[in-house]
Length: 250
Ligand code: SAM
Image 1 (tube, rainbow, N blue to C red):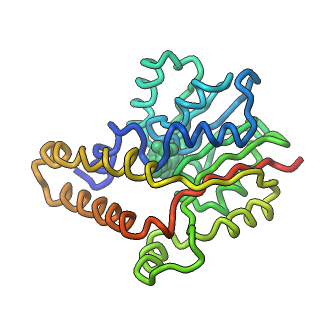
Image 2: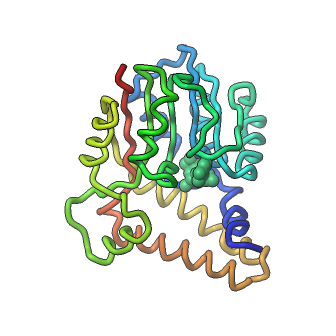
């Protein structure tokens, strides 16, 4: 099985495919000032199996287009929405975040947790802006340095994994330069990484390896995930996901 299929198999039964929590999604809803009764059209971009889309559907009077390029994740999202009685509110859509089939000014809110890095923060916020109504809201989480200085080993790791990692002040500046008014920012706490993402993943390792006959390819994936977890455990003071909330200027 290809590395790609193995990664899908490891992650698709998870409640989320990246760090986060229902509480963090709710905090972002509050900071964005979204009222529970106002009818809203929302796109959740890079939705995975629906961690954020399900909270948005539960908390808001919203029609949500949940976009991901992996149909396997969207199938799980559709099942979860059905079980939660929320299918009327969520429309799964298979597509890529670099060529979204949306009309200009179609959405009140664009939401994206742990996914914009796939095209890069600066490009994502600039490209997606046209899909927002004037005055519409962007809520996006992005890997962010939380200290001005950091150990060389950590710096080197992120420069090879995602050189766009930067301080919140830089990301907020990029929002300002791209025609948004930043209105809120917070950092995901360690529980979002450990309790909600890494520990559940580690609990899946054994069955994952068994399903794939302990193959070298499956073991390599577990080893890479384990290295990422150890890096976070050692250096969590220096980085996290920042959650950025900004309004599109008219
Ligand atoms: N938002 C979900 C969450 O917080 O659980 C998923 C986060 S996961 C780290 C990133 C997601 O982006 C994955 O579901 C992946 O399939 C999706 N993705 C990656 N590249 C994409 C692209 N070019 N277009 C659409 N989705 C993409």
